[in-house]
Length: 143
Image (cartoon, rainbow, N blue to C red; front, side):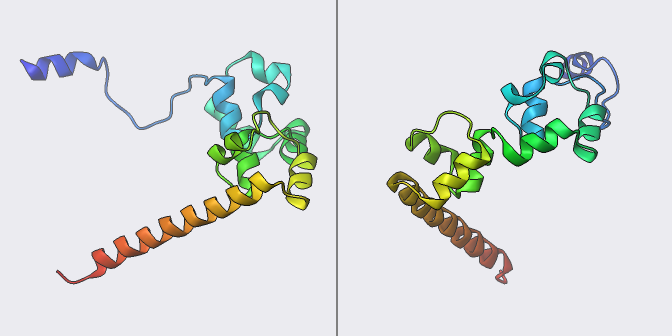
């Protein structure tokens, strides 16, 4: 009886091929690493297919190249360029997208919160690395 319920829940054979359906502009912007409000209206207006996304990644148009170079950048990109976590941005009061110029200004003259967040982030990364090494050592031990 359970087998019939499972069989009916899937109308056709399952495949691993990507769906041709369009993704939301926010999803496409996230995959491209750009701030959605800064994208052109035609990008924000319609769904982007996987094929279109692949084309944008392989042959980025001028607007995409410019956004990646100068911003405004989404929080994950800002955090990465500053060497801190996204949570660290929030604790530092950075809630809006920043341009490359703004990021560079923060890096050249870091405020106290940024210095503290970099130290915290470095400790977290070091601890994660230590745990990975310890786990790898346990799997390498003869048992």
